[in-house]
Amino acid sequence: MIVLLHKVFLMTKTSLKPYNTFGINASCDRLFSFSSVDELSERLNEIDRQTPFLILGGGSNVLFTEDFHGTILRNAIKGIVVVQEKENTVIVEAGGGMVWHEFVHWTIQNDFGGIENLSLIPGSVGAAPMQNIGAYGVEIKDVFHSLDAYEIETGKIRTFDLPSCQFGYRESVFKRVLRNQFVIVKVRFELQKSGHHRLNTSYGMINEELTKKGIENPTIKDVSDAVIAIRQSKLPDPKEIGNSGSFFKNPILPNSQIEKLKSEFPDIPVYPVDENHSKTAAGWLIEQDGWKGYREGDFGVHQRQALVLVNYGQASGKEIYDLSERIIASIKDKFGIELEREVNIY
Ligand code: FAD
Ligand code: NAP
Image 1 (cartoon, helix red, strand yellow):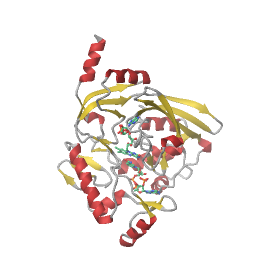
Image 2 (cartoon, helix red, strand yellow):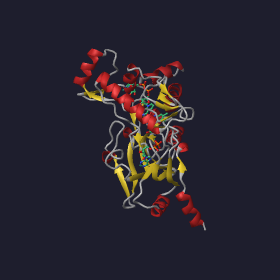
Image 3 (cartoon, helix red, strand yellow):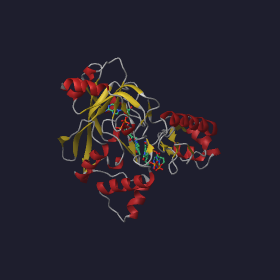
Image 4 (spheres, protein in one colour):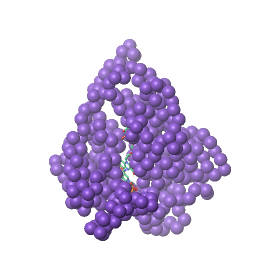
């Protein structure tokens, strides 16, 4: 009987609206959560491997442009363990299905430094390596130790160290060549004990926020609180307006191209990346091109943050995708820069 009910559950067509922060009302043929590797394995054995499937965490970096005709696997593997402790550092392992900010909060409560600048990023621990999440001058590659991932084809667990993840700017091997082949089940981070951690407050707004509060010698928690305050004041809350954060990546360009752009657009923001490349801000380009606050029906560009495309209620994923196409063409026309989407399109 239990088995029968279980099969019926697996067959159910499910709305994805509660499972993506854009709030897109697409559906999938089946959806299940797994809270252990054994459960993942069991469930995978029950589905037809020839039909499409997709691994989902918090759904905060996806755009469904149509119904998903396949199975969605939701990661619910939880748990935090300190796997190694040294004089100045700890290696902490977190389950891939944990809410990222809950993990950050735990590290701060334990006075471990390294991911305080990544406070309040939505989503799961398991998706964090997928695009090497980054904010306020820190990326997870800076504290990454290793991860365990379940290979869907073989059912084996493979461990990836830092080089094998091929992290780049909002990139990893999992977003490209190994896309949808591995489920990230555990991630390990090497964090610093508080007296040994160098805080990174180089990102202008953090210092401003600390000064505003009169904090001269910040703690790990002070930096986390500052990041939370800045984020809450600037970024749209998906609970209020559907969005997936930055829709496009910030373009990294050869310095020769940046120099030409600077002569035409002297105010263009430029941040050095390496000897030959610099980054400019996609949000600035979109704003200069007049898209900030654009709205048509229920889709548009956020009023305060031009890098964020939004769903005011009933927009379809296709409408948002088509808007992104128009923005890409428009930026190409004005600046000669080809914007790349950061959000994963399905
Ligand atoms: P999902 O959206 O569920 O999945 C994203 C991709 O990862 C999909 O392709 C999915 O198949 C894959 N995936 C998910 N889980 C796994 C797994 N366990 N194993 C293998 N593949 C998996 N990002 C930043 O980098 N910096 C920010 O500051 C930031 N701010 C944001 C602010 C807002 C308001 C929002 C809405 C988004 C923001 N993001 C930011 C984007 C997003 O939060 C991150 O990319 C986050 O890591 C996505 O996690 P998720 O669990 O929601 O992933
Ligand atoms: P912001 O501070 O207004 O800055 C705009 C852009 O300029 C950022 O995207 C940032 O690039 C770049 N920048 C600013 N100061 C910089 C510095 N000192 N060094 C290098 N680059 C600098 O950005 P924001 O939109 O409010 O976001 C703040 C942070 O949160 C950023 O790091 C951003 O990436 C992150 N964030 C990410 C998402 C997402 O979905 N990916 C969503 C919201 C916020 P970088 O993006 O490379 O840092």
